[in-house]
Image (tube, rainbow, N blue to C red; front, side, top):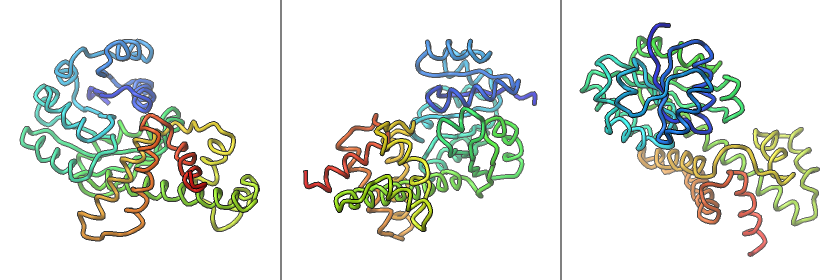
Length: 294
């Protein structure tokens, strides 16, 4: 691949994802607001560090963004990156963004002749590190998808074409809503069982060979809650944001489905109690406390 890749956002996910692009030998320039982090990471992985967004744009044909929200992605584009890109450049937003915001950004970039796809990921830091993320891709054309695919395959081993612009971000939010609901349901079951005298570990073992089994019972709760680690690597603020995106999607479509609304409110309660910097598994502590009438 001869196209030059630019990467914005060298955080928990962006650092291993960009490292995997560099490891495949693609020409890579990286940028983060933290310039010391940018320089250190560039030196570590053999990439070029950009001092400004404009410098990044001038050095790139394809831009990958891995940022906290779609609003931040839009701001980065407006703060000089989009103007520095040549027409027919491609932006790949791998952040967890609002689907309608992706449609708006796509239209705004199209006025400048810049192509756009949304390609959020699932798998958290462990699979970002091994390059085995699942990636959900919303693209307007097959040409855009095929152009992005070699870059995406550096970071993931399961690439799903979900449909048009915004469908990737919608799928990410719906997946994380399902995961969040599963974690909440399993947590409540263990909390109630404990109050009645059941051993939580025994209860979890039974769930995992029964119909209550889900991702959280199989890995997250045993590895992070019952042993007191609370270190899954996925922040409470990020999961709460994704569930809210799903809840807002329900409202915007006129569906007003109850479970997604209640799940969003329940995670909001944990966020308000703990703060967004905490690991999402610490929500268990809040729900346990509330169940005890405290």
